[in-house]
Length: 173
Image (cartoon, rainbow, N blue to C red; front, side, top):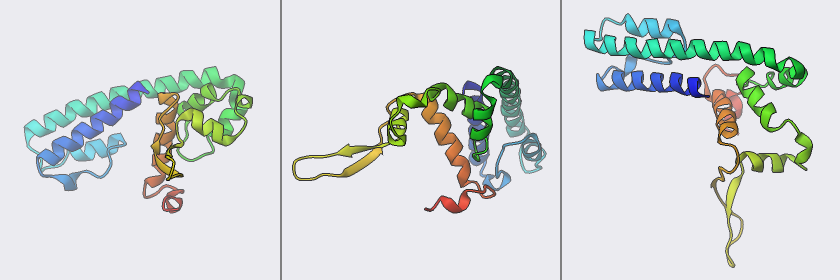
């Protein structure tokens, strides 16, 4: 979670730097080394901005290498539960880290009488505001339960908003 957060923070910082220069058109997504390199090779950026972006890219790369190393370690540890993990990873947006996180929190699924109870445990159910004369009003998610689990599930769901993602058509439903 930490290293994924570092990668995301470096992308956000780089985008903020670019926006500060008024060069919004230079970035689309910074999710690969090729995309970063294309940005760093842009002639429109001054030397100081390129240097700042190189620092962000360097930290992004280091965090990415840690994520890869952790994924390898986790895959070794997950050999016992490989069938469950494989099934979870068939869901778009869910990779080794998210699937292991989900398994860690939902390992004993029998403790939840229904899917609604599991969603409530994860803090993904809407809060309800009832009073004597008004009932059935719902607000934001409750955010009860494990923060890490909720964060992983939300990040996986956000992948559906990407243009090339197979679940994109379901986003508006």
